[in-house]
Picture 1: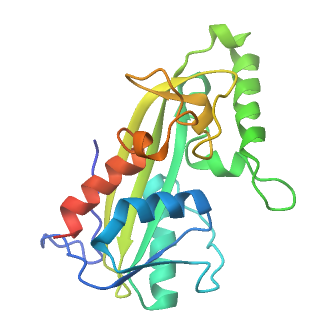
Picture 2 (picture 1 turned 45 degrees about the horizontal axis):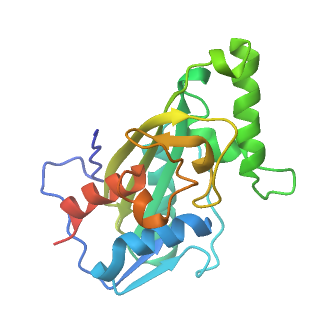
Length: 220
């Protein structure tokens, strides 16, 4: 899997090791919070969130997963004075030439600012049908991406990226997980992520892969 290493000073020093007792997770997504807390386990004494500090989400103006994760992590680290962890993730669909990609969450946004991923999945389905004539003719290959950035208040950041390869199904299945999970079957399985219990999803998920890489870099 590709690993992107970011350092504020662009030097060749070893990765920075996290040695504190609190990380602030730069998200307002309850599903991601639970997943990351489960993955961190006992490695960090306290996992706070941007919500706990009353922070709104910054504008995600990057053109890639890593750029957007960096924006979020550095913003929260600067505002809280604590190391901050940010995830930027999305799904890339062959039927839509890689869309929605970094705009996966935007596709779910409603006029009132809340998110409806059933609506987003329907949009992806309808666009694929429009482009390819019907769902059966549309390519089903897809992959999830998760970029995790751990940033410190001094601006230093470490980043990794994990992928989960798989295929799309329609209609969506399962009420586990979140986001586009119910329409994605990971490679080597017959269940969607929406069908899976969290412990099964962690075996192949993009976020779990990114987290494993982050642990290798930044945790003893």
